[in-house]
Image (cartoon, rainbow over all chains, first blue to last red):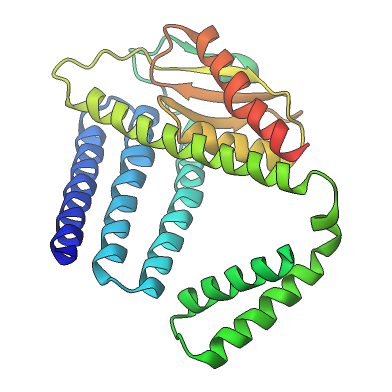
Amino acid sequence: MMDILVAVLTACLILAGAGFALVAAIGLNRLPDIYTRMHAASKAGTVGSGLLLLAVGLHAGDLSIFARAIAGFFFFVLTAPISAHLLAMAAHKVGYRLSSHSTRDELKDYES
Amino acid sequence: MITFILSLVFAVIWVAVTGSATPHNLIFGFALSTLSLWIVRGEMNARGYWRRLGRILSLLILFFRELALSAWKVAVLVTSPRMDLKPGIFAFPLTVDRDFEITLLANLITLTPGTLSVDVSEDRRMLFVHAIDCSDIEATRRDIAQGFERKIMEAFR
C-alpha cells in the first residue's frame, strides 16, 4: 500500500516537473525578447527542476538522498534568480532593446 | 534544554546529509552541532531570537507560495493562444538599505509572479524591475513594498 502511494506521488511529481520544464521551453520560444524570456526560464524552469529533484529524493526512499535532493533544490532557488538578473542586466547594458510591446523603460530614463 | 534538543535535531540532519547512519557518525554530528551552537550562543540568547526565527520561516513560506503561483502564471501565459503582453521596466524605490537585504529582495522579486529585477541604481535607492504586465505599476509597487519588503524588515531588523 505504502509503496503504491509513494509510486503514485513520485509519478505525479515527475509529470508536474516535466510539464513545467516544457512550459519553460515553450515560453523561451514564444516570448518576444530576452527580458520576458528570462521570466519563463527563471520561474517555470526552477519549479520544474525542483519538482523533479523532489521526485528523485522521494523515489530513492532514503533520507540521506532526500536531504541532498532538497539541498539541490535550495541551491537552484538561490542561483536561478541571480543568473536571470545578470543576463537581463548585461543585455540592458549592451543596449539590447525591449520588445515593441513594451510600455516603458525607466532604467533607460534613469541612465540618460 | 533547548540547546540540547537543537543539537540532537542537527545531529540527525547531519547523519541524513552525510548518509551514514552509524553511531560514530551520530556522536560526531552531535559534537559538531553542539560546537556550532556554542559559537553562536550570544546570538541565540539575545532577546527576540525565536520570534525572529518565526518571521524568517513565515518569509520562507510566503516565498514558496509566490514561487508556485508565479510558475503557474508563466505557464498560463505562454500556453494561452494569444499572449497579451505589456512588458516594461519600472523603478522601485527601496526602503531597505543594507546590501544583503537588497540582494534578498531582488532575488525574491525575481521569483515572484511577473517581475524580474534587472539592476540597482548606484546610490542604492532604486531597484529596476522588469514586469511582464505593466498595466498597473502602482499596484505592483505596493505589493512588493507591503509584501516582501515589509517581511524582510520584520525578519532582519
